[in-house]
Image (cartoon, rainbow, N blue to C red; front, side, top):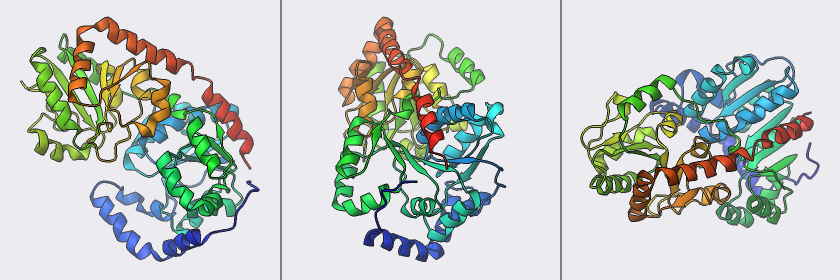
Length: 429
């Protein structure tokens, strides 16, 4: 357990007081999220720290990964920990319904370990809710992924003498500026961690500037398993689009679909049979997208591309399918016009031998794009994107060269999961 504890600050105390007072408001908030499909009705008690499963006996390692990208990245670590100790059990908590489905899907395909895996939705950061959660599950180690720093949850683990690790710790320049204004609070919170493994050298430097010990191990998203897919669906789509030029705009965000459709219309003058597949990061945006670019056939309605050659694939968990179908990929959340922006994970298409492009707003994945700089093309606007797609369609050899460069870079990272798992194993109480 960390010995560099700092006493609570007024901000942390205020957060605890606010959290104690919030339950009357949070319960209707959760019900509202349920109506929007963002929670599962029968599992709402978990958000209040009430377990829906009996705890398995023996040692239990807890992993908390907020959303899909983070949860996929922990699978190789869990596999390696299981190899070290086949009696080890695991509790995975997530904050989204989509990430729960990913956990369910992944371990359904790995029966050798599935009996050792339990999933719960993470409780909201209310002191007595998180205390109920920690008291029930009593993990021998808690591993928090990236930037899910919930003060009351972390404090409760600390008070229950549970070692805590921050894995793939992220601290961007923007976040550092905010934290630095409240440096004592940051130190009081982060000092409770027994191990902080920074995602990049730059993140490590930012943690250290706050006065917090951190080490650099590498970005665990490099070692995440290949995205899963439906082999029958892939075969059907390959047959459907046989001999047609095709490309993918993956994980798009508001305003980007308009740019993609503009590029598609320009490219169609040269490539009249071109198929452009758009996979929005949040499928529930399909109505908004159609309002902006006009009616597009939707995969969620079992529709297929019409004479325009556009296809909106507004389904969850199918990026693995489309990365295998298309070897020309634009990665979204990266244009200047995108609210917030910051990019998305390029490691997923890199592992599936895709030639990749992105806009220039990729600060959330700076280290990843630096690693893959020789394999990714930056296309900041519709003109450069159009030129790049045309080049990739026209020159299959160049397309293959980019894809192989990316794959070679990814193959160099295979030892990371074993090293991290070994370190985590020795942290357990």
